[in-house]
Length: 402
Ligand code: T4K
Image (tube, rainbow, N blue to C red; front, side):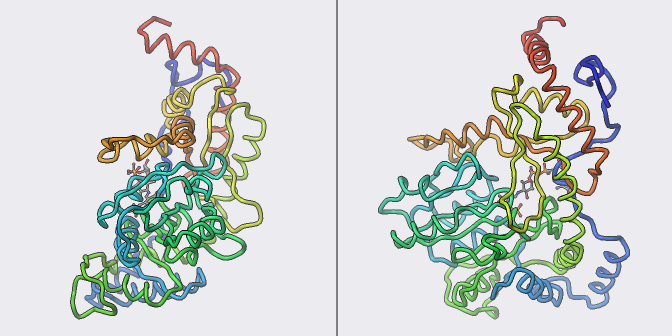
């Protein structure tokens, strides 16, 4: 445990960790189970195009989340683009900019115009109040993001969308195993899109899944995911190759089998962070809704001016120690190409503030209590000497020795 400024790697001492501790750590299944699953794929010689493991995964997701339909696809971004086409949207869709670029890019690939709305400072998601001013004659839908697994104002947005005749759908990339009002996320809005990327609680290395309780929308999504005429369940027009492979399904099934253990581990580490964060001045740990199920996959800090040092100073300090914290999400999608080139840039003060203040710290199978304790100790040290660290880093940036 480091006690003084001179012990910090930022100022020349060896890092706290010899190996890098990343965010987005992969939940790998036991090797034997992985081998057995892949032996099965090799024995069957069925690698893709609606194999038995994809069917098994769809069944398992339906049962786990309590939804009528699960449609597995190749990744979360394609899932969103397929969802938008299955809803037959046109014109503009209201979406947050405080999200991963894939959320918004999916809309563009579906031929839609994203319109950015601000998010709530506490939940980090859209609200009915933040969306309402952006509704216009071209608006066809609202795409909410359950960021960090927190449900995105489902009742407020549903009421608003009903009142204006808009479709509501969700990016649930972060939200597998998280609930809202006691129900698992998966059946909210018209359709929801999960990601099974390596960094997610359920991992197929790459992968994604659509869930809905609407039979017609499910039939359209199932048809759009496959460009082959033989797999037609609805009249959809343009289609794409969005099929999930057997290899992806095998990994995702194993991930699902071990979900409870991964979630419990995450929760233990998250609770350690929460306990330690309670006394931090100017650094808030994003907390999850009380009384709901959660996957505890993300530990997100917000660094404000009371901390005495900036988010980027804390980031530099941690990274020097091989704690590979990340600025998720920075910059906001509205500042990224091609959206930054809009004639009238949107005003999103809460989003811009969050992009400046938020920092994701490591959580996952490679973080045990000891590692979490060292990370918290580094933050304690940073806060105790915030002024001096800020001064030294500023001097370094300006090329002044010391
Ligand atoms: N909506 C939301 C809200 C999302 O967060 C995402 C994806 C999507 C939609 C789209 O879903 P997908 O189309 O991806 O299914 C990563 C992921 O690639 C991306 O899936 C994820 N969100 C996003 C938050 O993070 P990068 O470019 O920042 O990933 P990368 O490669 O820098 O990895 C992050 C960290 O994870 C690394 O520090 C190390 C660790 N890692 C990563 C990979 C790929 C591993 O330990 N092993 C690995 O194999 O986007």
